Figure 1: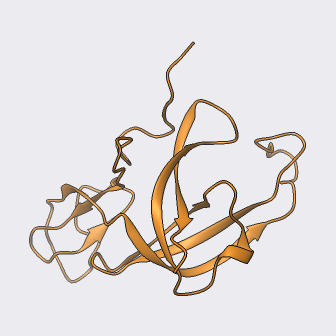
Figure 2 (figure 1 turned 180 degrees about the vertical axis):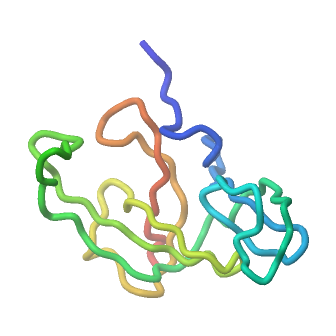
Length: 140
């Protein structure tokens, strides 16, 4: 049996206190996620250096929605039958960025509101061995 592994290497940790891994510009302090760029995304900064850094584990719901409909062909639903799920755009205020992610298993749009505090969790995606980050409501 294969061990559970991140769906994308280097984007998040899977330890007891998981964190997304972003990049930070040492010149202007701008953050980036996902950690794919080699230069600062701030158009006012000319730095060609970005440093990997863990991001905040908690944030506030900036927006949210649900995916109620099975994707049309040629896209393939992750589960059959298709199971609706919620998606949240979460603002990490210290980093001044918004990160999109699924909402943790067992939670839906009824559990969310703009400004609600959420925390990062790592879960298997759709019953597979592939791990992804998700946002779990903190129950403020």
